[in-house]
Length: 64
Image (cartoon, rainbow, N blue to C red; front, side, top):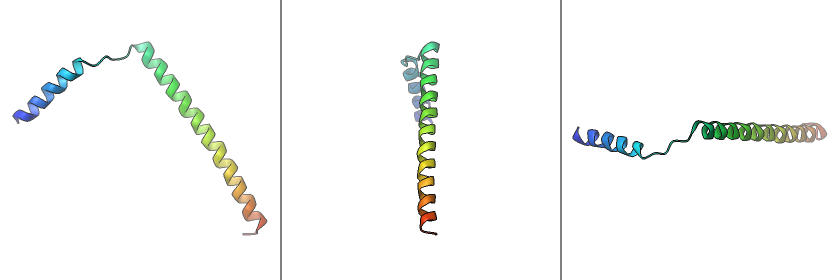
C-alpha cells in the first residue's frame, strides 16, 4: 500500500513540472489537427472512390 501512495505522490510532483499550453495555443493546435484530419479523410475518400470505380470497370469489362 505504501508503494501505491508513493507512486501517486511522485505523479503529483511530476505534474507540477508540466508546462501546460495557453488557451490560444491549445485552440490553434486543435484547429490544425481537425483541418488535417478532414483533409486526410477527403483524400482517402477520393482515392477509395477512384479505386472502387476502377475495380468496377475491370469487373464490368471482364463480365465478372
